[in-house]
Length: 338
Image (cartoon, rainbow, N blue to C red; front, side, top):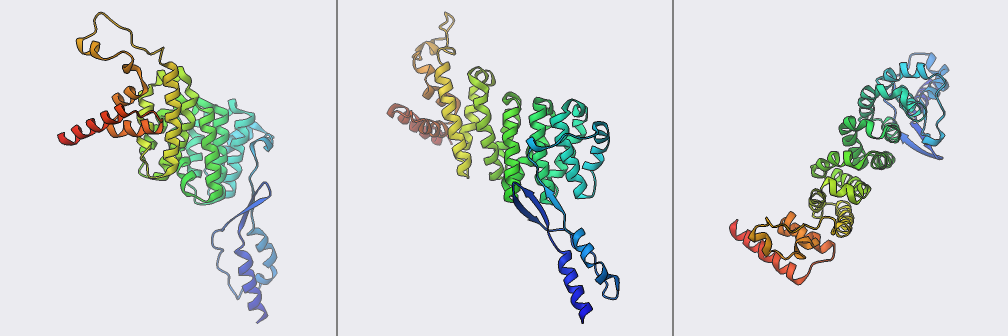
């Protein structure tokens, strides 16, 4: 009877959780099911404590500024790919932290390996174990900070997974993924990033659209006045307008932020993009009042559908009675044609 009790206690101790710590906080993640125990094995009682200790693994999440340099750069470079592809999740976490260290202290040395490293980081982001996933998110943030535009060609799969993890995983994983996305919008050129983000605004998953909208709203202001003009303010207005009617308020609020920014930029740049009069102008163009052709209202109405233009003008608080009547008339005629 005493042996049975000890066996029961041993089973309980072997199902201890893996504890990850960051800034004094702990997070619980279950370990895989322990191997079956044979009650007839007399060694069970003798090895109870050592086995229980082996079943408890502590994962520590270290902020970037607190990461130490690697001892042997060449040795780490040779072993990091195998570590990232290991079947042992603890080894994967160690390798991810080594990628972080290399990114911070020896980014030139790992530059030629990025094509192999980033797909393995993406693989870790898909890992069902939260400790691996969170460490991969932290690794992504450090990669963005170190390599900036050098990873643009490798960004698609990484971006997709970070958007996914920031929207539907455990809270502490979501937070790490959001920090990685913030680092991405901070360090990657908006001119290169926005074309990657725009397809994500149409994703079927509303939560992914919401996270993509937030990234979009952070990237647009970084273009600056000239950058917005070069990228195409009409493209940006159309992308933002599509989010005004989105399912989640997070998307709608991000769209409002972008549209207000674009309105400000448009009105500041207005003298610079004012159309010049030409002797070759057609009679139809001459009939359009010059002042009307460059207003924000007219611009929105020329680039958007009637309903979208009305929504944008309402958000930017410039809907006049004339504009409202024009939109209603346009909408009615469109309905009649349909």
